[in-house]
Amino acid sequence: MNAEQAVTRCPICGVTFDPEADRRNRPFCSERCRLVDLSRWLRGEYVIPGRPAIDPDTLAELGLDASDLDLTEE
Ligand SMILES: [Zn+2]
Image 1 (spheres, rainbow, N blue to C red):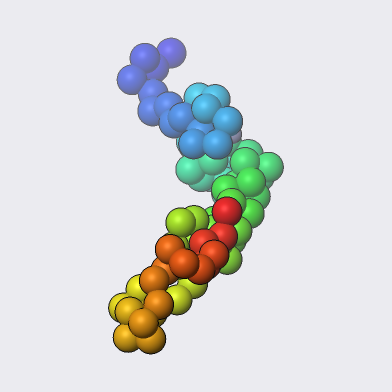
Image 2 (spheres, rainbow, N blue to C red; image 1 turned 180 degrees about the vertical axis):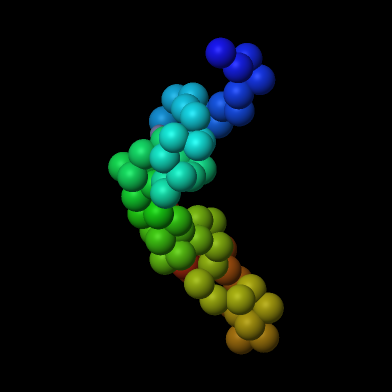
């Protein structure tokens, strides 16, 4: 038994596992968690929460205010 054995905690489901046991899915415990992380990451590409779709400075040049328009995606 090796008490110093490295253990990694899966960032998706929080389970601890031996990263040497299945190197393909590191740093995740399984393919399922790896895919969950990937899908979250991809969705983050399309939606930037709380960010106006148009630059506020551009609106100011047009005499508009971002708060007058519903530009944020919830
Ligand atoms: Zn996991």
